[in-house]
Image (cartoon, rainbow, N blue to C red):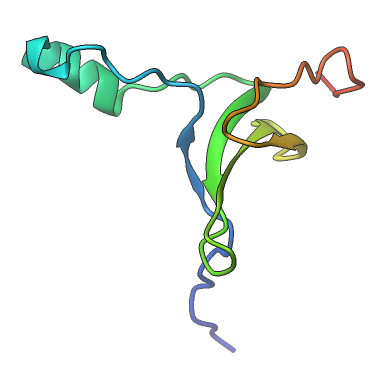
Length: 91
């Protein structure tokens, strides 16, 4: 049986805690490309932005282990990243 692709209910939306440039109009093309396209890609715990796309449509941050895909913590956008290493995280 072939199934249609499942639409994720809580899709990953990108790296969390990226500050918006103070003066985006002053950035040249390589600087703007660096802001828009280049992201960290660590092995281990990583803070990401997620949204509950098919439910409440709220955005939130999650710390996910990029090796095991285990979600170590979730938190609101206006909260600092939790220190999952000192709170019993696996890395």
